[in-house]
Image (cartoon, rainbow, N blue to C red; front, side, top):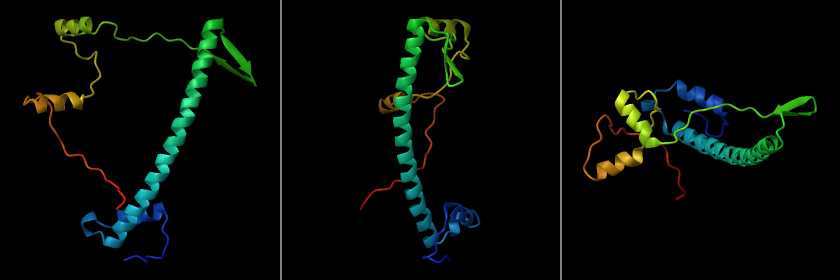
Length: 148
């Protein structure tokens, strides 16, 4: 279908696969997609590693700057025509989980929560033969890539 020697950019390859139904994808095209996926994945993982390292350093500098502003009661610092200052906002946090749960039971107001399923806990219930109401298992697909 495609010249195996021809180099295809990621954009060209994406536009090519967009025209072919997946059930009709020829092997050579599918293999090129996998090779491209591996390369893009490796590149992304390296960039994420670099970004994580940069973020850790940034966070350390930010934490230090916040603590200096707090300790010295600084409103702001003017450097190179830019002002960096400490912003404070007051946010709600749970200080007594049991009291919060009791309040929600009394009022029936669960809108105080943001939902994210603790899948580990659901799995623990399942392992003991208990089915959690309102929860179902679905198949999630991903690719693996291992050296042979």
